[in-house]
Structure formats: structure tokens, C-alpha cells
Image 1 (cartoon, one colour):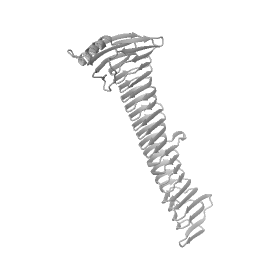
Image 2: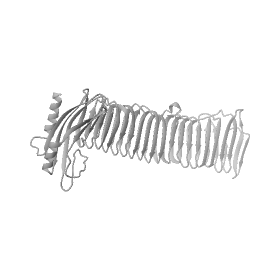
Image 3: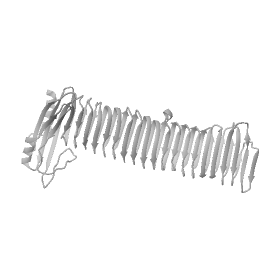
Image 4: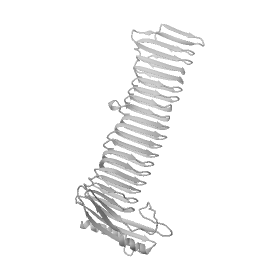
Length: 471
């Protein structure tokens, strides 16, 4: 304790040097508490306060106050009357910094100073010091426009304020944090936390518990959070890494980066940018957004779903059924193990190394798939080409493309019925079919059965060519 007081005294003497024309005062007080009491500390706006936890059943406060006012009589009145007061009940203790009223209306600055302006009157106040609180008691504060530093708390925390520089370390029961227009850093802590901070910078690392966050226009970093978390924001930069459960992000006009999500990742975004790596499942609803996702596992039958209007989608190294609803995007699918279902209107769709059934409903899209291993293939399109390179012969393939060509290359081994028809186009195949005919300027067809199997291939165009080749 002697070292603590010496350190504080040094701080005050350094911050408020001898001969300073401003009025200064040191306030020191002890408040006895009970282990079951809720502690509330209020009135320390514009302060540079370090909170410390200890095992004693008391709150200890020592602060230094410096005041500069245009009215010297008010300066003296403030220094004489400012005090610490407490209100005790069996359930709680409320400790306040009580200040005398100023002669004018006031506004609060966001710089750590408390400035009051009206008709030429002003007040500048600075408060520095330390507050020790019992580490196991619940604590609530309402600090604003200041600096708040707290470590090693076991009791539940509700820290309500604005425009603070807030740092928490080793606090195991963080319940609520409010800090608009400020900076919040939480490290090696835990709890079921609700946190808000408009136009702020928020960093949470090594958190044992869950997080619900509301932070528009902010820079957000979550790293190593053990349970499911939710983020609501807007026009933000969001980085989430190593989340031990589901993660939900609702953040229009934002850049979102998510990595190592041990659960379902859900993102809603408009006109943003999304990058995902290593998630157990993925649901993205993102209009006019670029999406880049890789290493999506689809565990426990979690579907991989992406919905949008325009932008781009790159999905690579994914395990699980994939469903895409995106009318006007460039879509690239690489190394997918699962069924693929695509709905689009005017897109460019490319697939490579797909193991699973394929279904696509497009209108004016080009579809190119290389290395497709599918039992069932169903495709409809109106214009632009369809080009498939298969690694196994399908058991069922139905492709209809009105004004775009269809080209299919597959290995030998298909057994079943084949029906190829181009109303105004050519049909080219090397399969041994019984009926083939080409009408000059009026289309062609090739019909027949290969082997004795039950497979079925049907390819139709209205005004385009059909090509089916067996390698």
C-alpha cells in the first residue's frame, strides 16, 4: 500500500506541478463492502482512472483533481465542495463523485477535459487516480470521455459510457460494455457479453464465452472466442478469427474477414466484401458483394448457401451440398465435394473438380465445368454455351439449352438410353446409336440405346449445336 500511495503521489505531483495557477485537490476514501453487494461507481467523467481489483471487502479511491475556470470564486467553491459520497443498501453500494453546480449550462468535451461554455464562462477539469474494488463483487460504472483500465475481476461487469479508452484484462464475467466513439480492448477475459460501440474501435482476444455486439461504423476484431457470437454493424471493417461456435454477422457496406469458424457462419451484407476461410458451414446473403470462401467443411449436414444479386463468388475446397442463388455474378467453384445447385440469370459459371450431382437453372449464362463426377446432371439455359467434361459416365443427364450450344465429353461406360435433339442445329456424337439424322438447315437428332443399363441422357437445343463424345 505504501508503494501504491507513493506512486499515486508521484503521478499527481507530475501532472499538477507546484506553482500551477489551477486549483488542485487530492481526495482519498475507503468504503467498506459486503461480498454480496453490487458496486456502482459514477460521476467520473473526463477522468484518467485505473481500476484495480483486490481481495479486500472495500472500495479504495484516491484521485487528484485539477480545475481551471474563468470564475475564480467558482474554482474555490469546486475545490472546497467536490467530494466522494456513498449510498449503502443490503444489496449494493453506490459511490459518486459529487460536484458543485456550475453557474452556467455545460457541455462535455471528448478529449478527457470537461469544458463548460456559456456567456464567456468556462471550466476545465482533469481527474487522475486509481480505484481499487473487491474482485468478486459485481461492478457497474458510467465513465465518459476518459480512460478506464481494469484487470483481474471475477464479479460481473457492466461498463456503461461513451468516448472512452477502455482496457479490460483477465476479467472473467464481462456482462455489458457500452462505449460509443471510443476504443475498447478486452483480453484474456470471459462471460456472456453484450457490447456496443458506434464509430469505435473494438478488439476482443482470448475470450471464454459468447459475444453479442452492436457496433455501426466501427473497426471490429474478434480473435479466439470460445462460444457462438453475433455482430451487427454497418459500414465497418470486421475481422473474426478462431470462433468456437456459430458466428452471425449482419453488416451492410462492410468488409468482413472470417477464419476458423467452428460452427455455422451466417453473413448478411450489401455492397461489401467478404472473405471466409475454414468454416464448418456457411450461409451468405450478400447483394452486390464479392465473396471469396475456401475450406468450408459442411459438417453435420450443414448446407453451404450463397445468395446475392451481383458481384462475384469464388468457392474453393468445400465439403457439403452447395446452393447458389445469384442472378448476375461471376461464379467460380473449385474442388467441391457435394451436390451443387445453382440458380442464375445472366452469369458466368465455372466449375473445376466437382464431386457430386449438378443442377443448374440459368437463362443467359455460360456454364463450363471441368472434372465433374456426377451421377445426376440437370441443366436448363436459354442462351450462351454449356460445356462439360465428365470424369465418370452419368446415370441421368438432362440438358436443355434453347439458343446456346451443348458440348459434353465423358469417359466410356455409359449404359442406357440416349436422346440428342437440335431443332435448328447439328448433332455430333461417337456413341453407336440406332437412329441418327441431319436435316439440311432444319436440325438433327440422334436416338438409341447403348448397352443394357437403365441410364438416360437427354440433350435438347432449339437453335444451337449438340456434341456428345465418349473418350
